Image 1 (cartoon, one colour):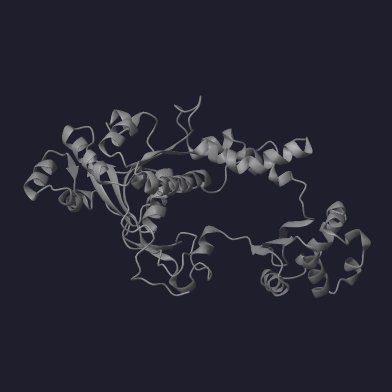
Image 2 (spheres, helix red, strand yellow):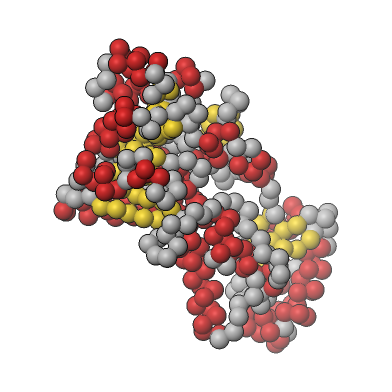
Length: 403
């Protein structure tokens, strides 16, 4: 497809003030920002979002989830800083926050205060839990994966294991966007804002819904995924002749027919024990070693080419490093050349959606701390002299301090 870079994005004109850090809040903000909203990231002066300094598996959090917005760094624990926050709230369509329960209230920016300042405001609180007995608890992605059964379902029996990415933070942020857009749609009719909540624990429960339903239907405990009795006989990772791994899925009778014909295994195709998917599932202990032997006879690239030719589900077992140059992700320059904290750049994925010919791309690099403080304050009516005083008194952090 070709992108129309001159066409206004779907959320152009929407102003969002973001009191967020780590992943859940910024993952909500990056969707809104990529879709065209003016997202103003309010960072706590002087150091800003603590994600900027995380290492290990968290080193990429800030670069991934903070593009396409502006940064203002403010000391909210001062009267002058709170005044700035209230001015931002008064002009915003949406406020997002993912601080610990009670923090925004202590800072003077809780929902009850914000809705009085701006009755049309959609206030999105991204928390560990929705309303209920757990509401005041703090939570993290990994905490709720264990609490909600996802870690149990991911690891082998007796070895619960968190998913390999912060899936619940990101999902929670995305459902925050869904709630925000629904509330904005309702505001179009009523003119009134409201409180929207999205939470980590309930997002895990949403993912676990099919397992819960399956357990209720079958009236027996659902085992972890590595020990599951699959709905398909061939649906797993297999080894190739060159000691690589590929995932193969044969999930329909047509898949099975094409597989057998390609490898000239008409004995398997004509075996009544393998005629239907249900038959193959029942006979999978006999069938799997046969298919594994076929896959093991060829090299990885040969197997992948055959699977694509006969159009059955397949995948190489990829690692992070394999994604940077993936031809699908890079189609027509779709990857975003994003600045890293040390000044280098890396190609990172766009939002996983297409909307007509909109260019849902990179308009602003992830900001430095307070990079847009003066620009935003100027829009709020602050003159240069007043901004200089605020900076001298360490009420705000500006771009020079954020380098």
